[in-house]
Image 1 (cartoon, rainbow over the protein chains, first blue to last red):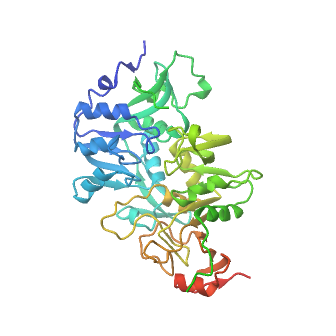
Image 2: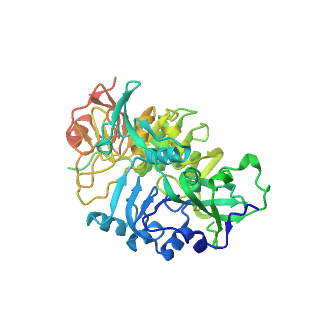
Image 3: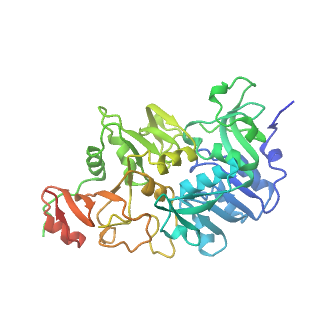
Amino acid sequence: MLNKIFTNAEAALADVPHGATIMISGFGGAGLPVELIDALLEQGAKDLTIISNNAGSKGAGIAKLVQARRVRKVICSFPRQPGSDIFDQLYREGKIELELLPQGTLAERVRAGGAGIGAFFTPTAAGTELAKNKEVREIDGVQQVLEYALHADYALIKANVSDRWGNLTYRGSARNFGPIMATAGKCTIAQVNCLVQLGDIDPEHVVTPSVFVSRVVLSKQVSF
Amino acid sequence: MKQSYTPRTPEQVAQRVVQDIPDGACVNLGIGRPMLVSNFLPPDKDILIQSENGILGMGHIASGAEIDPDYVNAGKQSITLRRGAALFHHADSFAMIRGGHIDICILGAFQVSAAGDLANWRTMDPDAIPAVGGAMDLAHGAKQVFVMTDLLTKDGQSKIVSHCTYPLTARGVVTRVYTELATLAISNGKFWVVDLVEGLTQAQLEEVSGLKMEKTS
Protein backbone atom coordinates (compact mmCIF):
# COMPACT_ATOMS: atom_id res chain seq x y z
CA MET A 1 0.00 0.00 0.00
CA LEU A 2 1.30 3.40 -0.99
CA ASN A 3 1.29 5.71 2.00
CA LYS A 4 3.55 8.79 1.94
CA ILE A 5 2.17 10.31 5.13
CA PHE A 6 4.81 10.72 7.85
CA THR A 7 3.86 11.05 11.50
CA ASN A 8 5.72 14.35 11.90
CA ALA A 9 8.17 16.76 10.28
CA GLU A 10 11.12 15.45 12.31
CA ALA A 11 10.70 11.95 10.85
CA ALA A 12 10.25 13.33 7.32
CA LEU A 13 13.51 15.31 7.50
CA ALA A 14 15.65 12.82 9.46
CA ASP A 15 17.89 11.82 6.53
CA VAL A 16 18.91 15.27 5.23
CA PRO A 17 22.73 15.19 5.03
CA HIS A 18 25.23 18.02 5.51
CA GLY A 19 25.85 19.88 2.26
CA ALA A 20 22.38 19.18 0.85
CA THR A 21 20.75 21.47 -1.71
CA ILE A 22 17.25 22.33 -0.57
CA MET A 23 14.47 24.14 -2.41
CA ILE A 24 11.97 25.93 -0.18
CA SER A 25 8.65 27.18 -1.56
CA GLY A 26 7.07 30.46 -0.53
CA PHE A 27 6.77 34.09 -1.51
CA GLY A 28 7.33 36.02 1.69
CA GLY A 29 5.25 34.07 4.22
CA ALA A 30 2.66 32.75 1.73
CA GLY A 31 3.41 29.10 0.93
CA LEU A 32 6.44 28.95 3.23
CA PRO A 33 6.59 25.49 4.92
CA VAL A 34 7.50 26.88 8.33
CA GLU A 35 7.12 23.60 10.25
CA LEU A 36 9.45 21.76 7.85
CA ILE A 37 12.04 24.56 8.15
CA ASP A 38 11.83 24.42 11.95
CA ALA A 39 12.32 20.65 11.82
CA LEU A 40 15.35 21.08 9.55
CA LEU A 41 16.77 23.51 12.10
CA GLU A 42 16.29 20.92 14.87
CA GLN A 43 17.72 18.16 12.68
CA GLY A 44 21.11 19.87 12.42
CA ALA A 45 22.18 19.52 8.76
CA LYS A 46 24.66 22.27 7.83
CA ASP A 47 26.53 23.68 4.78
CA LEU A 48 23.17 23.86 3.06
CA THR A 49 22.45 25.51 -0.27
CA ILE A 50 18.98 27.05 -0.13
CA ILE A 51 17.01 27.80 -3.30
CA SER A 52 14.04 30.03 -2.52
CA ASN A 53 12.56 33.33 -3.66
CA ASN A 54 13.57 35.17 -0.49
CA ALA A 55 16.24 34.76 2.16
CA GLY A 56 13.97 35.02 5.18
CA SER A 57 12.71 37.93 7.22
CA LYS A 58 12.03 38.94 10.80
CA GLY A 59 14.01 36.03 12.30
CA ALA A 60 11.48 33.46 11.02
CA GLY A 61 11.59 30.72 8.39
CA ILE A 62 14.79 30.68 6.34
CA ALA A 63 16.21 33.52 8.47
CA LYS A 64 16.43 31.05 11.39
CA LEU A 65 18.60 28.67 9.33
CA VAL A 66 20.76 31.58 8.20
CA GLN A 67 21.10 32.86 11.75
CA ALA A 68 22.13 29.39 12.99
CA ARG A 69 24.93 29.53 10.34
CA ARG A 70 23.67 26.43 8.62
CA VAL A 71 23.45 27.96 5.16
CA ARG A 72 26.48 28.19 2.88
CA LYS A 73 24.74 29.67 -0.12
CA VAL A 74 21.39 31.17 -1.06
CA ILE A 75 20.04 31.16 -4.63
CA CYS A 76 17.14 33.62 -4.75
CA SER A 77 15.63 36.66 -6.48
CA PHE A 78 14.84 38.98 -3.60
CA PRO A 79 16.93 38.64 -0.42
CA ARG A 80 16.13 42.16 0.77
CA GLN A 81 13.12 41.98 3.10
CA PRO A 82 11.88 43.94 6.09
CA GLY A 83 13.83 42.48 9.00
CA SER A 84 16.30 40.44 6.88
CA ASP A 85 19.10 41.77 9.12
CA ILE A 86 20.85 38.44 9.67
CA PHE A 87 21.25 37.67 6.00
CA ASP A 88 22.29 41.27 5.27
CA GLN A 89 24.98 41.18 7.96
CA LEU A 90 26.47 37.82 6.92
CA TYR A 91 26.41 38.84 3.26
CA ARG A 92 28.30 42.07 3.97
CA GLU A 93 30.85 40.11 6.01
CA GLY A 94 31.28 37.67 3.10
CA LYS A 95 30.10 34.77 5.26
CA ILE A 96 27.25 33.69 3.01
CA GLU A 97 27.23 33.29 -0.75
CA LEU A 98 24.41 34.81 -2.82
CA GLU A 99 23.44 33.86 -6.36
CA LEU A 100 20.93 36.51 -7.40
CA LEU A 101 18.55 35.59 -10.22
CA PRO A 102 15.66 37.38 -11.88
CA GLN A 103 12.52 35.81 -10.45
CA GLY A 104 11.33 34.39 -13.78
CA THR A 105 14.76 32.90 -14.41
CA LEU A 106 14.71 31.31 -10.97
CA ALA A 107 11.26 29.84 -11.63
CA GLU A 108 12.19 28.58 -15.10
CA ARG A 109 15.47 27.04 -13.90
CA VAL A 110 13.48 25.14 -11.27
CA ARG A 111 10.87 24.12 -13.85
CA ALA A 112 13.60 22.97 -16.25
CA GLY A 113 15.21 20.91 -13.48
CA GLY A 114 11.96 19.12 -12.78
CA ALA A 115 11.14 18.66 -16.47
CA GLY A 116 14.42 17.09 -17.55
CA ILE A 117 15.58 20.12 -19.54
CA GLY A 118 19.29 20.86 -19.23
CA ALA A 119 19.32 24.57 -19.98
CA PHE A 120 17.50 27.30 -21.89
CA PHE A 121 17.98 30.80 -23.29
CA THR A 122 16.01 33.74 -21.90
CA PRO A 123 16.03 37.42 -22.92
CA THR A 124 15.66 38.46 -19.27
CA ALA A 125 18.78 40.17 -17.89
CA ALA A 126 20.54 40.35 -21.27
CA GLY A 127 22.84 43.38 -21.25
CA THR A 128 22.71 43.75 -17.46
CA GLU A 129 25.07 42.96 -14.59
CA LEU A 130 23.15 39.74 -13.89
CA ALA A 131 24.22 38.30 -17.26
CA LYS A 132 27.90 38.74 -16.46
CA ASN A 133 29.98 35.62 -17.19
CA LYS A 134 26.99 33.91 -18.80
CA GLU A 135 26.82 32.85 -22.43
CA VAL A 136 24.71 35.23 -24.54
CA ARG A 137 23.41 34.36 -27.98
CA GLU A 138 21.23 36.22 -30.46
CA ILE A 139 18.09 34.19 -31.10
CA ASP A 140 15.28 35.57 -33.30
CA GLY A 141 17.09 38.89 -33.29
CA VAL A 142 17.04 39.12 -29.48
CA GLN A 143 20.00 38.83 -27.11
CA GLN A 144 19.35 35.86 -24.83
CA VAL A 145 21.17 34.49 -21.78
CA LEU A 146 21.99 30.81 -21.23
CA GLU A 147 20.62 29.53 -17.93
CA TYR A 148 21.03 26.00 -16.55
CA ALA A 149 18.43 23.87 -14.79
CA LEU A 150 18.35 23.77 -10.99
CA HIS A 151 18.00 20.51 -9.09
CA ALA A 152 17.66 19.84 -5.39
CA ASP A 153 18.23 16.92 -3.05
CA TYR A 154 15.10 17.96 -1.16
CA ALA A 155 12.20 20.27 -1.97
CA LEU A 156 10.27 21.51 1.06
CA ILE A 157 6.88 22.83 -0.01
CA LYS A 158 3.58 23.88 1.52
CA ALA A 159 0.30 22.71 0.03
CA ASN A 160 -3.29 22.78 1.21
CA VAL A 161 -4.82 19.30 0.76
CA SER A 162 -3.16 15.91 0.24
CA ASP A 163 -4.19 12.27 0.14
CA ARG A 164 -1.94 9.36 1.15
CA TRP A 165 -0.50 9.16 -2.37
CA GLY A 166 0.60 12.81 -2.22
CA ASN A 167 -1.78 14.36 -4.74
CA LEU A 168 -1.76 18.05 -3.83
CA THR A 169 -3.92 21.14 -4.09
CA TYR A 170 -2.84 24.60 -2.98
CA ARG A 171 -4.51 27.69 -1.55
CA GLY A 172 -4.47 31.19 -3.01
CA SER A 173 -1.12 32.74 -3.81
CA ALA A 174 0.52 30.22 -1.45
CA ARG A 175 0.83 28.02 -4.55
CA ASN A 176 3.74 30.12 -5.99
CA PHE A 177 6.88 27.92 -6.22
CA GLY A 178 5.31 24.74 -4.72
CA PRO A 179 4.24 22.90 -7.91
CA ILE A 180 7.52 23.50 -9.77
CA MET A 181 9.78 22.78 -6.80
CA ALA A 182 7.85 19.56 -6.22
CA THR A 183 9.01 18.42 -9.66
CA ALA A 184 12.66 19.43 -9.14
CA GLY A 185 13.39 17.79 -5.78
CA LYS A 186 14.80 14.25 -5.63
CA CYS A 187 12.82 14.00 -2.40
CA THR A 188 9.85 16.35 -2.13
CA ILE A 189 8.32 16.84 1.28
CA ALA A 190 4.95 18.60 1.51
CA GLN A 191 3.60 20.28 4.63
CA VAL A 192 -0.19 20.29 4.22
CA ASN A 193 -3.15 21.87 6.00
CA CYS A 194 -5.45 18.91 5.57
CA LEU A 195 -5.44 15.18 4.72
CA VAL A 196 -8.27 13.49 2.85
CA GLN A 197 -9.12 9.99 1.62
CA LEU A 198 -7.99 8.83 -1.83
CA GLY A 199 -10.52 10.00 -4.37
CA ASP A 200 -11.72 12.94 -2.28
CA ILE A 201 -9.66 15.31 -4.41
CA ASP A 202 -11.41 15.61 -7.77
CA PRO A 203 -8.84 14.38 -10.35
CA GLU A 204 -9.67 17.52 -12.37
CA HIS A 205 -8.48 19.64 -9.44
CA VAL A 206 -5.19 17.94 -8.60
CA VAL A 207 -2.44 20.55 -9.11
CA THR A 208 0.60 18.44 -8.22
CA PRO A 209 0.15 14.77 -9.25
CA SER A 210 1.34 12.38 -6.55
CA VAL A 211 4.37 11.06 -8.47
CA PHE A 212 6.23 14.31 -7.70
CA VAL A 213 5.76 13.97 -3.94
CA SER A 214 7.77 11.67 -1.65
CA ARG A 215 6.59 12.54 1.84
CA VAL A 216 3.60 14.33 3.35
CA VAL A 217 3.37 15.90 6.80
CA LEU A 218 0.17 17.29 8.31
CA SER A 219 0.62 20.77 9.81
CA LYS A 220 0.30 21.02 13.58
CA GLN A 221 -0.94 24.55 13.19
CA VAL A 222 -3.05 25.56 10.24
CA SER A 223 -2.16 29.14 9.46
CA PHE A 224 -5.32 30.52 7.89
CA MET B 1 9.22 81.83 -2.80
CA LYS B 2 5.87 80.23 -2.11
CA GLN B 3 5.15 77.11 -4.14
CA SER B 4 2.46 77.90 -6.68
CA TYR B 5 1.39 74.26 -7.10
CA THR B 6 0.38 71.25 -5.00
CA PRO B 7 2.04 67.91 -5.83
CA ARG B 8 -0.24 64.91 -6.42
CA THR B 9 -0.52 62.43 -3.56
CA PRO B 10 0.53 58.83 -4.36
CA GLU B 11 -3.20 57.97 -4.53
CA GLN B 12 -3.78 60.75 -7.06
CA VAL B 13 -0.86 59.51 -9.14
CA ALA B 14 -2.40 56.00 -9.07
CA GLN B 15 -5.72 57.45 -10.26
CA ARG B 16 -3.88 59.29 -13.05
CA VAL B 17 -2.25 56.01 -14.17
CA VAL B 18 -5.61 54.25 -14.23
CA GLN B 19 -6.93 56.81 -16.75
CA ASP B 20 -4.38 55.48 -19.28
CA ILE B 21 -5.27 51.79 -18.86
CA PRO B 22 -7.70 50.62 -21.54
CA ASP B 23 -10.67 48.33 -20.87
CA GLY B 24 -9.64 44.67 -21.10
CA ALA B 25 -5.94 45.30 -20.51
CA CYS B 26 -3.78 42.85 -18.56
CA VAL B 27 -1.61 44.88 -16.18
CA ASN B 28 1.15 43.78 -13.84
CA LEU B 29 1.86 45.85 -10.72
CA GLY B 30 5.37 45.98 -9.27
CA ILE B 31 6.45 46.47 -5.67
CA GLY B 32 5.96 49.86 -4.01
CA ARG B 33 3.81 52.68 -5.33
CA PRO B 34 2.37 50.72 -8.29
CA MET B 35 0.52 48.41 -5.88
CA LEU B 36 -1.80 51.33 -5.05
CA VAL B 37 -3.27 51.07 -8.55
CA SER B 38 -5.32 48.02 -7.55
CA ASN B 39 -7.33 50.29 -5.20
CA PHE B 40 -8.55 52.51 -8.03
CA LEU B 41 -9.83 50.08 -10.65
CA PRO B 42 -12.91 51.56 -12.30
CA PRO B 43 -15.95 49.25 -11.91
CA ASP B 44 -17.05 49.93 -15.49
CA LYS B 45 -13.85 48.50 -16.99
CA ASP B 46 -12.51 44.94 -16.92
CA ILE B 47 -8.84 45.46 -16.07
CA LEU B 48 -7.04 42.21 -15.29
CA ILE B 49 -4.35 42.84 -12.69
CA GLN B 50 -1.57 40.25 -12.81
CA SER B 51 0.67 39.71 -9.79
CA GLU B 52 3.96 37.89 -10.37
CA ASN B 53 3.27 35.52 -7.49
CA GLY B 54 0.55 33.71 -9.39
CA ILE B 55 -2.59 35.85 -9.59
CA LEU B 56 -4.60 37.11 -12.56
CA GLY B 57 -7.59 39.20 -11.50
CA MET B 58 -6.27 40.76 -8.33
CA GLY B 59 -8.63 43.15 -6.52
CA HIS B 60 -8.11 45.89 -3.95
CA ILE B 61 -5.69 45.73 -1.01
CA ALA B 62 -7.37 43.77 1.81
CA SER B 63 -8.38 45.20 5.16
CA GLY B 64 -10.04 43.85 8.30
CA ALA B 65 -11.77 40.51 7.84
CA GLU B 66 -10.57 40.27 4.22
CA ILE B 67 -6.96 39.71 5.34
CA ASP B 68 -5.74 36.15 4.63
CA PRO B 69 -2.01 35.26 4.72
CA ASP B 70 -2.36 33.01 1.65
CA TYR B 71 -3.47 35.93 -0.53
CA VAL B 72 -0.70 38.52 -1.06
CA ASN B 73 0.62 40.77 -3.83
CA ALA B 74 4.20 41.21 -5.07
CA GLY B 75 5.00 43.37 -2.04
CA LYS B 76 3.54 40.76 0.34
CA GLN B 77 0.57 42.99 1.22
CA SER B 78 -2.73 41.18 1.78
CA ILE B 79 -5.02 41.50 -1.22
CA THR B 80 -8.40 40.38 -2.51
CA LEU B 81 -9.40 38.62 -5.72
CA ARG B 82 -11.96 39.88 -8.21
CA ARG B 83 -14.66 37.60 -9.56
CA GLY B 84 -13.13 35.76 -12.51
CA ALA B 85 -9.66 35.59 -10.95
CA ALA B 86 -7.25 32.72 -11.64
CA LEU B 87 -4.39 31.30 -9.54
CA PHE B 88 -1.29 29.58 -10.92
CA HIS B 89 2.32 28.72 -10.10
CA HIS B 90 5.44 30.79 -10.66
CA ALA B 91 6.59 29.23 -13.93
CA ASP B 92 3.15 29.91 -15.47
CA SER B 93 3.22 33.42 -14.06
CA PHE B 94 6.54 34.21 -15.73
CA ALA B 95 5.43 32.49 -18.94
CA MET B 96 2.70 35.15 -18.99
CA ILE B 97 5.27 37.84 -18.28
CA ARG B 98 8.10 36.84 -20.64
CA GLY B 99 5.77 35.41 -23.24
CA GLY B 100 4.32 38.80 -24.17
CA HIS B 101 0.87 38.29 -22.59
CA ILE B 102 1.04 41.36 -20.31
CA ASP B 103 -0.10 44.62 -21.94
CA ILE B 104 1.33 47.02 -19.37
CA CYS B 105 3.56 46.65 -16.36
CA ILE B 106 3.82 49.45 -13.84
CA LEU B 107 7.12 49.57 -11.95
CA GLY B 108 8.92 51.77 -9.47
CA ALA B 109 12.30 53.25 -10.37
CA PHE B 110 15.58 54.60 -9.05
CA GLN B 111 16.27 56.25 -12.42
CA VAL B 112 14.60 56.52 -15.83
CA SER B 113 16.50 57.98 -18.77
CA ALA B 114 15.38 59.91 -21.84
CA ALA B 115 16.14 56.77 -23.86
CA GLY B 116 13.63 54.82 -21.77
CA ASP B 117 16.34 52.96 -19.85
CA LEU B 118 15.19 51.72 -16.46
CA ALA B 119 17.32 51.30 -13.32
CA ASN B 120 15.32 49.94 -10.41
CA TRP B 121 17.16 47.02 -8.81
CA ARG B 122 20.31 48.34 -7.17
CA THR B 123 21.95 51.62 -6.36
CA MET B 124 25.69 52.17 -6.11
CA ASP B 125 25.48 51.94 -2.29
CA PRO B 126 28.08 49.23 -1.48
CA ASP B 127 26.19 48.36 1.70
CA ALA B 128 22.88 47.70 -0.02
CA ILE B 129 21.78 44.10 -0.57
CA PRO B 130 21.09 43.56 -4.28
CA ALA B 131 17.56 42.32 -5.01
CA VAL B 132 15.92 42.06 -8.40
CA GLY B 133 12.67 40.12 -8.03
CA GLY B 134 10.64 40.06 -11.24
CA ALA B 135 11.71 43.49 -12.52
CA MET B 136 14.00 42.28 -15.33
CA ASP B 137 11.47 39.74 -16.62
CA LEU B 138 8.70 42.35 -16.55
CA ALA B 139 10.73 45.13 -18.14
CA HIS B 140 11.56 42.79 -21.03
CA GLY B 141 8.32 40.90 -21.40
CA ALA B 142 5.52 43.46 -21.01
CA LYS B 143 4.34 45.21 -24.17
CA GLN B 144 4.57 48.58 -22.42
CA VAL B 145 6.43 49.66 -19.27
CA PHE B 146 5.03 52.51 -17.19
CA VAL B 147 6.96 53.90 -14.25
CA MET B 148 5.24 55.33 -11.20
CA THR B 149 7.57 57.19 -8.88
CA ASP B 150 8.38 60.40 -7.06
CA LEU B 151 10.24 62.75 -9.38
CA LEU B 152 12.84 63.49 -6.71
CA THR B 153 14.69 61.22 -4.29
CA LYS B 154 14.69 62.00 -0.56
CA ASP B 155 17.97 63.88 -1.17
CA GLY B 156 16.36 66.03 -3.88
CA GLN B 157 18.02 64.25 -6.83
CA SER B 158 15.92 63.88 -9.98
CA LYS B 159 15.04 60.29 -10.88
CA ILE B 160 14.41 61.48 -14.42
CA VAL B 161 17.87 61.67 -16.00
CA SER B 162 19.57 62.07 -19.35
CA HIS B 163 21.55 58.84 -18.73
CA CYS B 164 21.17 56.28 -15.93
CA THR B 165 24.18 56.01 -13.63
CA TYR B 166 22.81 53.03 -11.67
CA PRO B 167 23.01 49.47 -13.07
CA LEU B 168 20.24 48.93 -15.62
CA THR B 169 17.22 46.69 -15.30
CA ALA B 170 16.50 46.98 -19.03
CA ARG B 171 17.35 49.28 -21.90
CA GLY B 172 14.88 51.44 -23.86
CA VAL B 173 11.66 50.01 -22.40
CA VAL B 174 9.89 52.81 -20.47
CA THR B 175 7.21 54.71 -22.42
CA ARG B 176 5.47 56.66 -19.61
CA VAL B 177 6.49 58.13 -16.24
CA TYR B 178 3.86 59.17 -13.69
CA THR B 179 5.09 61.45 -10.90
CA GLU B 180 3.71 63.79 -8.27
CA LEU B 181 4.40 66.80 -10.52
CA ALA B 182 3.83 65.65 -14.07
CA THR B 183 3.08 62.81 -16.45
CA LEU B 184 5.79 62.29 -19.05
CA ALA B 185 5.99 60.25 -22.22
CA ILE B 186 9.28 58.96 -23.63
CA SER B 187 9.93 58.68 -27.34
CA ASN B 188 12.75 59.42 -29.78
CA GLY B 189 15.21 59.76 -26.90
CA LYS B 190 13.28 62.60 -25.28
CA PHE B 191 10.88 63.29 -22.43
CA TRP B 192 7.55 64.77 -23.54
CA VAL B 193 5.25 66.57 -21.10
CA VAL B 194 1.81 64.98 -21.13
CA ASP B 195 0.40 66.91 -18.16
CA LEU B 196 1.54 69.09 -15.26
CA VAL B 197 -0.10 69.64 -11.87
CA GLU B 198 -2.04 72.87 -11.74
CA GLY B 199 0.15 75.91 -11.17
CA LEU B 200 3.39 74.23 -12.32
CA THR B 201 5.03 75.47 -15.48
CA GLN B 202 7.18 73.45 -17.85
CA ALA B 203 10.08 75.77 -17.05
CA GLN B 204 9.72 74.96 -13.34
CA LEU B 205 9.60 71.23 -14.08
CA GLU B 206 12.74 71.52 -16.21
CA GLU B 207 14.47 73.39 -13.39
CA VAL B 208 13.50 70.78 -10.77
CA SER B 209 14.57 67.86 -12.99
CA GLY B 210 17.50 69.60 -14.66
CA LEU B 211 16.29 68.34 -18.04
CA LYS B 212 14.92 69.96 -21.14
CA MET B 213 11.55 68.53 -22.17
CA GLU B 214 9.40 68.59 -25.24
CA LYS B 215 5.81 69.72 -25.40
CA THR B 216 3.22 67.32 -26.77
CA SER B 217 0.98 68.97 -29.32
